[in-house]
Image (cartoon, rainbow, N blue to C red):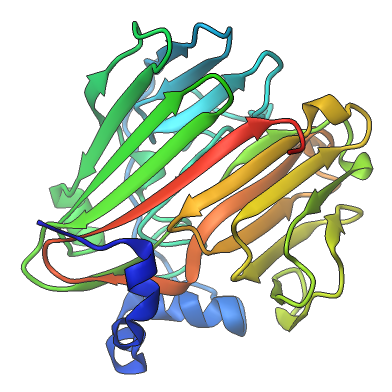
Length: 321
């Protein structure tokens, strides 16, 4: 198996040649990120059949931090260090009838709307638990795996293996996603960690990072507009759905009410874009107490040849570092 690191992918411009993307269902989403919103007609969907409480895995570190992970969607729903860093919406379901709305849901192999269901199918499926080292006090972790099924092949006809490793160390929550092309042909994909972070008050927080001068796609405009961002920090005073192409590295969600409950997101590999989302005014979703700061690879989809692997890593640290 050939492992293709993200820096190598960026350097291979031929992998993103227009001719290779125009025939791909993910090409439409890439264009949407740079021009306008897609309105998908009857996207292909998975049918969810579970209707009982979901199982979860608990990780505990000797420092006192902990994490909860559900194999359904490979969703991390809690990270306490010692306060709760993540947020689960009050309308979230934990019976498998829909993806878990909160924590760290996956978007794969599609980000947003397109030819298949919103954000793809990875968050709708039960991932296989390959390894759990919850009893290791200094490095507890869990490894989950997702591969193609007859149902995913009917929606997206590509063979793949996703490996997701979630672990705790003394200072942070570590999330690593590996996507391997196990097919005999190349294919492309998009991915994201649609992370919900808890805040004291959405009106009294801001997101800091390398936003100024970046390409900003405002998906709330009709049609969506693309401009250069003029701000160093982004605030939420209305509904926000914004993609910042090329903004990665370190991003800080600063809580002005409780600064010690701010959070630092370090995108270490793979993730190249940042998406901010909040359904401002939607009481049912609990908009007042969360901000989505998403680690994304979507503006330029990843193309993998047979046997290649794309690797992403992000670390989530309590506090503004």
